Image (cartoon, rainbow, N blue to C red; front, side, top):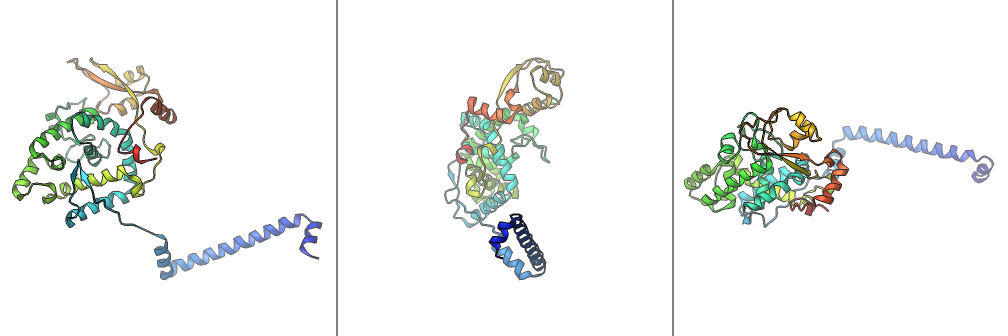
Length: 344
C-alpha cells in the first residue's frame, strides 16, 4: 500500500507523520546543539574561529575638518590626533552613556541654545554642559554643582544665589547666563574660543600662566594636567556624536529621545511656607515641582526681602507621555540643531 492510499483511508495519519518527523528533527537539533556546545567549550580553535567570524569591533573615523566654535583642530598633529582618537573611542563604545546623553540633550539644549545666542557665545559651548555634567544635577568632589558645575565661590561671583533654601547653580537658565558671563570675560583675555573653553576647566589664570610659562599661544600646543588636556577633545567628540549619532552606530527614533517639557511660570514675591501645599494648589505634586525647579533646595521658600522668583509649573500633558509628544508637536515645535536634524 502506498503513502497516498494510506492517507486517504486514515486522514489522521498525516498529522502523526508530521509530528513524528518534527520530533525527529528537533531531537537531532538538540543532540547537535549539545554536541557543538561540548566541542565549543573544549576546542580552542573552533572557539577562535567562531569569535573571529562573529565578533566585530571597528576603529572610529575621525573627521578631517574638526573645529570648535569655527576654530580648526590641527588633526594632522600626531599627538593631537591620538588624543582625539581616544575620546572618540571612549564615547562611541561607552554606548549606554552616549545614548543617555543624546536622549537628555534633546530635552535640555533647547533651553541653553537661545541663551548662548543672546549673549553672542558660539553654539558649540552647549557641549561644555554635556561634558561637565551629562545633564545631571550631581555634585563633584570639589563641590561643583548643576549642569555647568560651578563651585560656590565662582557661582556667587557671577551672580548666582546660594543659601540654605536656594541654589541657583541648579537653575538651568540662570546658571547658563552665569556661564556666559565667564565666557565673555575669558574671551576678552584670550580672543580665542578654544582657550576660553579650556579656561572653563582650568580657570582663566591657570591657562594664562601656562601660556606664558610654555611660550605658546594656543591650546593644542600646551602641556596640561590630565583633565584639562582631555577636556577640549572630549567636548569635540561629544559634539560630533550628538550631531551625527548614526555615523557612530547610535540609532534612535524621535520618540526615543527625551521630550522637551512645556511649562508656565508663576511669579512669586513672598514667602512660601510649604512647597507641598503650593504644589497641590497649582495642580501638581511636590516631586514635579522639584523636578522643574531643582534650585529650590528645601520644602519652603523664605522671602522676607520680597524678591521676585519665577517658579515653573509643568503643562498638564507631562503626566502622559503620548499627550506630552502631541502637545510639543502642536504648541512648541522645536528646532534643536544638535539632535533633531540628524535623527529622521
